[in-house]
Image 1: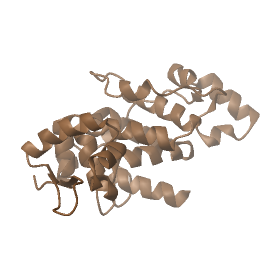
Image 2 (image 1 turned 90 degrees about the vertical axis):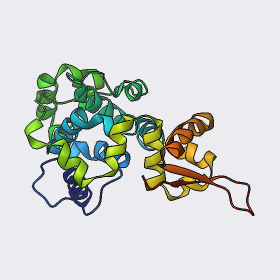
Image 3 (image 1 turned 30 degrees about the vertical axis):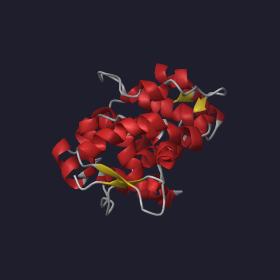
Image 4 (image 1 turned 180 degrees about the horizontal axis):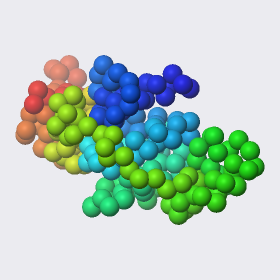
Length: 240
């Protein structure tokens, strides 16, 4: 698990979170990084806090249709409650509230407990965590104390974009389905095999996918091709 957290920290460092480590060599798959971070949050308060701060500051970069699909497929009930808390805290003072569509699909823990494992180590620690827990963490059943977002631990947007050029298009799309399509084509090798596969990986319906692809083709960011021996439409990333 420590190795997993070390890699997560390197990935967040690549995206501009000021962890004391060398950033990852390549830009991470942001949606899968969020999923993995939620799973490991109970092991590291700093990871949870800096990821939450990053989501507050750069939440428009998240491909929300794709993330919702991954949540449905990969997170258990406790992890969904952790994500609900993380995104609610990331909403703090943010307008518009970017993650409302995701939060609507999440539910609090049915058996509340401390969020961090260190606070589950004894009855005394559990009672202390319950007593000091914030209102939001009580709501989600994942108790933790209130904390300020660490904006001074984030690099500026210009640095984030320079190190992760594909994030520029995500910023332009503000997390809509086009961002999910480009993320799927970038990180899910089989997603471009057909419109149906692309819909499965990006989280949209086939009709929504077709409409979004019309726009992406118009601007050269994706293309649809059909071979002479196969009637199936294949989708490729564009060059712009």
